Image (cartoon, rainbow over all chains, first blue to last red; front, side):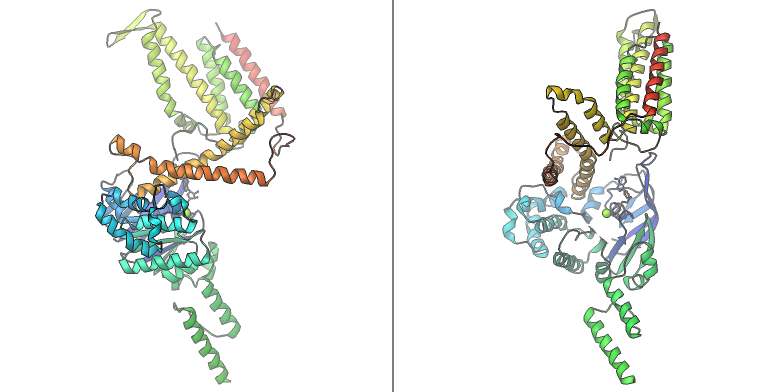
Length: 290
Length: 265
Ligand SMILES: Nc1ncnc2c1ncn2[C@@H]1O[C@H](COP(=O)(O)OP(=O)(O)O)[C@@H](O)[C@H]1O
Ligand SMILES: [Mg+2]
């Protein structure tokens, strides 16, 4: 489903002393099947933005379209439930939403609410467990007996079980150890490719944005600050630092190399090992020149 | 977050009223609540209203915001008015609504009682609008201090109060967050048959309780780790102090009350 924001505004608690303009005049489009990263400083409006994607919030100005659904001020969406089934949202610390007696019941909760029949749910569960790397033995356990990392996987499985075509992830790796973070991001990337999902990732990590996203939107104080491919955005050091964002480590490293050896190594999405080879050739080239 | 109900919501500012000692404010409101019942003439009501409105203006909070925050109680005020209109049978019959005779005494009673009600709610909401929960707790602990002599657990009571007050916003945020998460999984809290809506509360309540217990445990552990052992010998970070402005306020308040008694009939 294509997604578009047209001059969207969102104000929390309008006409009170606590009035807060969380989104201002925000416009962008996300084409179906793309992997988009939304980055920005804390409080820049990322979570507010994503709550528009399944109609939890309605814009107070402008228009949001998600496929055939339209969100506008003062107009209720009729089949909001269908929209919520299509757009799966994994909130920050999703393990807080677990409540049912067993892991299995909790995973089945979403699809059951959307009227998916029992057999279909049974069929969906094994491949999802596989994807989130949870052993089947856990299905009959209470979700509250699991480790923090496992609980998060159960919560994510609960969203995946809805079989959404748009997957929205709000800082899904916050609070995990580095290895868990990488595993989880790899898992989302695989799902994205395998199922042809449209994935929208809110993240603090410039590395993740660089590695997985094909389009990046940078938010600042509720407005869109920059937008483009990661390769284009992440080389503009000064502009990024103006909104307290760092360059991804790999690009910082390239910059240092360039300074030190007086070579020019433009970033074109190379992996570390490709870069290693390029660098070696460059340096060798220098030697033979002398 | 609830947008309409402002009772219990603090609005930061640096007004004279905000800076008063919370004990001054609580004492004066307590006295005001008593003295409202002494008003018995149009002039005395007008006088108290002028005083309350004067304070409301002095808080520097926008008046429409204060009034809008009272929306949930408007209903009660109007209800009180109508009740008195119907029930009271003093004075002359003024007119009839749906064959109910309306007496002049009823109109006067209705206006007087609903005005009283309005004044009480207005001044108490002014207290919570201009005083942080922590200040209120400190003030209550200090005002109840004499009760310690009869072994009344004043400190513990104040601690319980401040912890509850501290966690109300957290709990509200958590409620909002979890209900959004469950709504994203297809729970419908707002429409559908009542039975379904009651069932929809379970996926909300269980996570809330789980996190509240976890928070309580964390808090107890953190307090113990920092050597908390009850009120005995404990000093305060924020000392309450009566300033010139508090004495000034009491003098003004005294004058207001004297005038009130002069305006009584
Ligand atoms: N329920 C709310 N009521 C009032 N203000 C809010 C609410 N939720 C978020 N905000 C404010 O909106 C701004 C954007 O918040 P958010 O979208 O959560 O940012 P981010 O996810 O980028 O950290 C913040 O300044 C925050 O304080
Ligand atoms: Mg956020």
